[in-house]
Image (cartoon, rainbow over all chains, first blue to last red):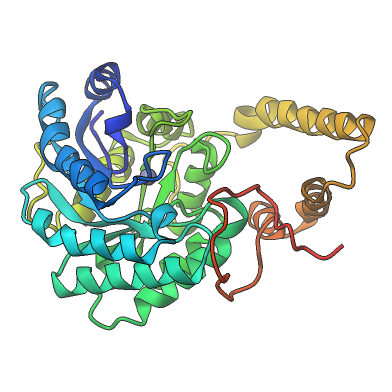
Length: 268
Length: 91
Ligand SMILES: [Zn+2]
């Protein structure tokens, strides 16, 4: 099979993971900027992180013949500090021209606070001004329902943003409809315990259609599964889906969304 | 909507897995009761969510029962973590 991993934090993963992904049929990996598991002490920490995402990590992936793309932002977990948030946002344009950059992400909310919303709005403005794709992280667990509604409403209110260029990630059964109704794309994240299992992700495809949904592993520094996407493809086959449908969900769908950014290219 | 060309029997595919998770839930509830922790707000939310198993869309209803239903942003984030149940849910 062939597939795209549209959301993986490869800076936290080993070369063994790269090898396993390539052997499983991965044709491109996309890495959103996120929390490192600890707060950076200053804007310089983000400067180095953006260099890693746009320079060093693509080279590491290239050793395995795997195209690597990235998204840039200050993540919502560090967005409570407005001064730091604005310093990071001001630095993003310097990196936006780099050839592996797909857009602004993963922005969003974590605890649904006022400052998180302010920084989200400023990121959305940056994306609108520069015609960038947007990748959104929705909050965890009990905060997801409220956060998803706040995020979708905020983005919908900005008439400069084409909803078809926005992907709302980590949707589950209680949030997917809100995202689909807004004309945006949704990401189904196959992450142990806190997000979706592959049977549930396939249930969601069966209920809402596969036109604007993709699956990702969101593998990072926590307990997570870098091969979760091809494992979900296997689950689809177990349910009786043919290769053509599996190829649409795991290859064509992400390629369709990501190709709206001219930096994204992939060989089938 | 998406449908497989060759539909498999979902009870054949998933019964053993669901059975095992159901027994795990029962054992978890026995354990919490044995340990005298039934007043924990997370456990109360858990029991409340079990009532949603009679709902029309069960997975969605369970997730909603465990969610913060409000829409007003909070003043400030004083923690980064989520715990899986809404602490302010009325008794
Ligand atoms: Zn992520």
